Structure formats: structure tokens, C-alpha cells
Image (cartoon, rainbow, N blue to C red):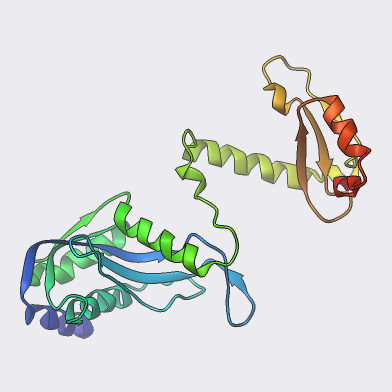
Length: 228
């Protein structure tokens, strides 16, 4: 691969700091952003950060995921060659993606840069999250898996339940004025009373109430129209 060989040669010309570790690769920003064409998306970008200096290099965010090893390598080399940000090659780089890790091992072995794959890149992910907070105009929402007690299995079951609810289209039989009560003793009291939203083609889902009295109070309020 001619481009990779050229980039490896660029790295070879630089001094090396064995004690510096860089984290990065392709990542998706944890925020919804409106693009130039008014399309709302969670953009992808290639970035690298030095754990020693905390200096960051990123490419231009894009609306689509690009599994482009060459682009990721180019960003790493551009970071290394930027004398204001780095001006040297690191001793190790850390990435999440197993395919990227394997390719970088092959490409960087000849310039004595170790490559490790990690499940999480805590420093890099935190920096990207801070960038998203600054860019995003709306309130920033945390990743669901960052909430204590939430696991991948819980999120999978939640997604399956949401899919089943949508496919059942309960709002075609019920309205927000119909209160349902679950009689099972194993249900949390805060989830025992609920109504189905969606008959007004606005908000789809379930609304939960602590009691019948709370539901009745909301139903008779001046702004009860939200139940539809």
C-alpha cells in the first residue's frame, strides 16, 4: 500500500517519545447536530489525543460513518508531523475498533509504534464529549450506558419493548384518556398506572402516573391536551 508506506516513512523521520500514548480513531459524537443542509445527525470524525500533553487533533466531522483505515492513519501522521501539536511519533497508540487495531499494527510496526485495542478510551471519549457539549445548542444527554446500573442487556430489552409497542399501534385503540392499571404484585408502584400516547399523531409512547389521582388531576388540567 503505497500511501501507507509513504506515511510510515514520514513517521520514521520524526523523533519518538516512547513514554507518550495516543488514543483515537474514528468516533461518533454523542450529540445531535444540524448540518449545512439542515439534516440533523450525529456526525463522525477522526481524532487523536496525546495522553501526556492532552493536545488534540481532529478531522472535519462528517454525516456518515467511514471505515477508512487510510484516512485514520493519515490523521495520525498529520498530528505527529504538526510541530505545534506534536512534532514526534508516540510510543503507543490505543484504539477501540479491532479491524483498525490490526491494520495499524501492520502499518506502524516498522516505525516501532505499539498498537493496543481497548474497550474504552476514557480520555479520548471525555474530550469528544466536551466538544459535543460546546457545539450542540440543545441540552446534552448522557450516554444511556453511562448511567449506574444500566447494562447492554437492559438496553436491548428496552429497545425490544419499544419496538413491540410501536408495532402493536395501541394508540389506534386507546387514547391518553384511557388509564390502564397493572395488577401484578411484582410491578413497581410507579409503573402500575399508565396511558397510551399517540392518538393525536404527536407523541408516541406510554405515560406513567404514581396514582389514579395524579392521572385525574392531569386529565382535568387546562393543558390536558398533551395526553393526545
